[in-house]
Length: 128
Image (cartoon, rainbow, N blue to C red):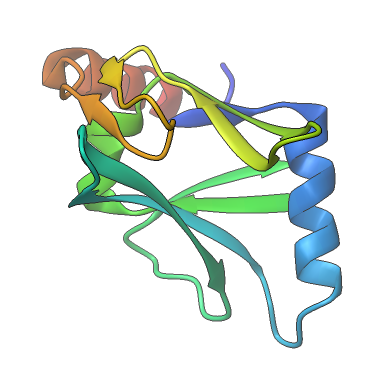
């Protein structure tokens, strides 16, 4: 059995997380969350982690550490985090099965909570 992970991250996302951590003193990783805001109702947040919170879900890929705030886990369950660089935008992107819509500018999203039972079962099955 693999270790439970609220989200997954691509190689590009892991590379970018490692780059961020390498350039910041005392950084351990990044923390993903959500907050109310924007025209669609919610926004993803990405913050630097200097002191991990034991209540956060912890995801590690090839030395890249991402922490997920407990209050965001139900909205981020099943999400794939990626990183993209285009002519117009550079940043993390999220393929989230809980996203029901997004605003036109792409800065905010509408999220529905994942099935709480599915989240609990996924956690329990990885603990075996």
